[in-house]
Image (cartoon, rainbow, N blue to C red):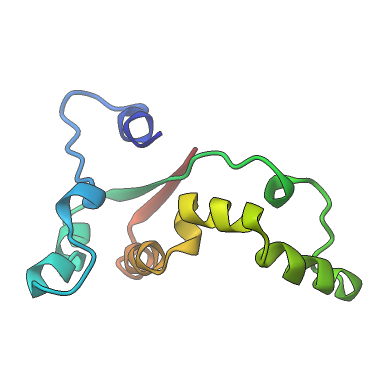
Amino acid sequence: DLVAAACAGSDMRRVVWIDVFAVRQWPGNGADLDFRGVLAGCTAAIVAAAPIEGKLTANNQGWGKSYKQDEKKEFLTSKEYAVAAKALPFCRLWCVVEIAAVLELRKALVFSS
């Protein structure tokens, strides 16, 4: 998924920085956590998310309605959600911080699956 997203619509001059390989996402070296400088030099960022099958992507869940809130809470504690949360970048704080930084820098943000 990641390679396909990085290559989609590209030419041989495209330069891609893949932070999952470039950045240690744990304490130790301040330079590893300074990704904003790299993002500032980019024209766009891609968030590659593998498709998730199951209840999370079902149509008409109605979770915004108050009578479905218990069902939503039950799902968020389920094994199905735990598995999906490991694959979805929107469920990982580091990814959300990077997405927010892209938006703060007013760079294009592309979502790909």
